[in-house]
Length: 345
Ligand code: ADP
Ligand code: MG
Image (cartoon, rainbow, N blue to C red; front, side):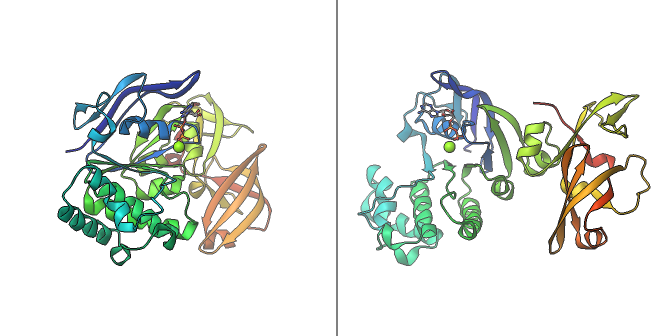
């Protein structure tokens, strides 16, 4: 068991609040994606878990054991940072063995463990190379190997892939997930790339200004974001505001649509749920919009629309898309169940 929990964790730097009473559970053996804009406190949270940052208030628990007074070395945590500095004058094997040497693991055992972990990250034959003789992706693997060779109970990854180019990054995402599954280690992964977080994580958390504003399974948070910030941050969302009239929601222009069950007066409709048609659909709440741009992209196409001074986006399958005019007036509509109520945040 190596569940990690933080409870009411707060940290300020002068007047800047980096973490504001964050409480969060990172399940044992799970892959948790931590997301948020730059400066939202992601790194501070990881560093507080690792022990590099002393919180002003709150607690960090690893396997139910409070650790804020436990030094970094004793927390059994492996870390990979964005700028995973490898020792340039050491070989790959020596880099990986470093943590074992510090822990005085006997040489024979250390050798076996380094070989095993290099195999795991698929660098078996490259143990004698120096970091400068490796590609970016290979260096990333060495950093991973170095973080897990000590068999930590928790792995903290702070934007480990952000230095890699797109194609390599996607390869490494798959690789990272495979390694994490094989080792079964509780992993907290920080990224500012929402797609990356959605792809890799069992659960995600969203930080904004040091506060945790949402936590849940990726599908759950995507389909029901709950607040405007999350809706816009995680994927694209058409956010429509109205006013409550007779149990319905009256949008700009006077069209009434179903009001969400939670009573919200703001709704999010994902582009893939916004239907665009040349002819008026048989739905009373269809809206008249102006198609400004049609962007063909193979199986799916994107429509950029204007409605009541607001830009909206729709993504449509090829057949639906091909039937639309190049531009001009069209109808837009959605199923009530796809309009999710939002808090202002
Ligand atoms: P993120 O990783 O999400 O970009 P950080 O945790 O690095 O965010 O930073 C959160 C906030 O705390 C930012 O406003 C940042 O400027 C501030 N901060 C972080 N570390 C320090 C530090 N060592 N000294 C002063 N301010 C810091
Ligand atoms: Mg950071």
